[in-house]
Length: 351
Image (cartoon, rainbow, N blue to C red; front, side):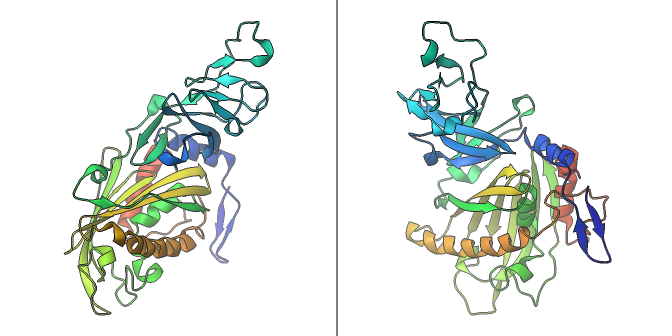
């Protein structure tokens, strides 16, 4: 149970077990990026998603996801080995599972039938946009998040960047990407200017499984933010943002005079207070691959500035809008308000 003392500015307590369970349940029907495709090849890989340990393995040419728990005595299958490219064998007693999760070999009793219960639970996987995606609740599964520019030949994209885990909930990270009024204070002279903290006019609406946000804002001129090339210090350029967000992914399209710059983010909610972040940036201008490192270095600076603030936010889980734990202001916080309303409709934030 969380309580807030307005006099001292102190937040007491941690999210309840019920709140954490609601967060996990609300996110289970969505597809979540859990690892880069190239990370799963000849050996099994352990990942954590929504507080649940999974093992990824490439069997018979496709990636499978199982509970990371051998049906025999509970050893982690992620420390096992792949046999003949088709089977996952437990390191403890050699129990071996096929791509469906069914046990096909128990070395200690090869002279007897394999028990029908000798199987591990499997989850559907997809490979898309250079990442492996897992859905834990297929009965209510949503569509895989859109990323149309990933296959658009007009855009050049750099490699997927995997950042160290952030000590924050996935929803807090997504809200950070939707929040433009922090530019002047968190990203001075890169994305914003403390002398001009005025919020833009927003358009915010829902469309299917996404929240859409559009606005135009003046930002420091820079080729690294679709600003039209390097310019004298102190100059700004209008940039139009067209943002498409799901509960754990964001496409930020920044349209300036030079062209369109894209920041794509997929968040893996390992737990209610820890998230793995995958980033990819692209552009339809300045497309020489030799320029990737400079663009990536710029984004690394921005991500580091964001992380410092986002990890400091409490509570980790979003409290109800009706509570007094967060004090939004209109119209500046409209994208955040609408995102949180959407999350409440999905049952994701609940304290």
